[in-house]
Length: 388
Image (cartoon, rainbow, N blue to C red):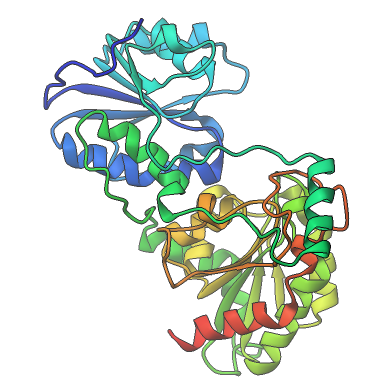
């Protein structure tokens, strides 16, 4: 069986971090990477990540190297490639069996990660579950209906689940780096964008809006705000298109020199076009038009972003942009943006007793999201803008 503690790690170790595969999760690992760099300032730290996330880590100060994998590459192929790099220590952030198998196949002497089915034998150090860890599970349709009925019968019987700040996902990764002697205290997730990148996206996407004679050029300083209405996880995380449009319209009436930048992937194009049409105000639909780095730069330029709980929400917060987020099936206590408790971000929830259910689709009436009105969201955006 694996040891519970790793042996001594030299200050100049060659450390491989096996990264996570989802955008939002990747952003939430940045505090752990920063703490790891603080603990080993002379070490060579490389990140193994899926190629779709490579641009997130461009010029990241905690890393010396980036190694990418494709979705079609086998664990054996990855392990074979890693063998030539002669890493001495591997820190495995995901909980999947494959991630542990990759570093075992690479022959890395010290392999640290959380234990779990089909992976324990591939690790040399099993990190104990941290205090405060909150296990999540999808509620069944039957359980959801029972909670709804309980609330109807007794207003004090059922209440939304609350988690302490220490339950947030960033602590899950910090706890792993603490096994290597790193500081477990949380930091705000942080990503880097250069001034050159900001200038490039302004020139490519915003030059027309700043040109003399345009609708916005003569209205005073242009306020850039973001709309991110998609969510790959499923419709249970999506506030309605009508609500996104209504917020844009309401805020624009108060601030008539506001330009809304709509973000999303190619499959979000119809959704973002519908919102632009319904809003009837200045909206620039950029869904499917940006690279990941361009998306990051545009999020950085925005003064506030209205977004569902999804990857770009975490990107915006890590780039220093305040976000306003309607939360439905997921929990802001566990996966909210930025440092838990950061007052710059406004995270709105309804009082639905079945939330969070962690389901992709709602089996009843979607009350967790329909219970969040346009007015409080618009007011939150105006509050952010007035405080800047």
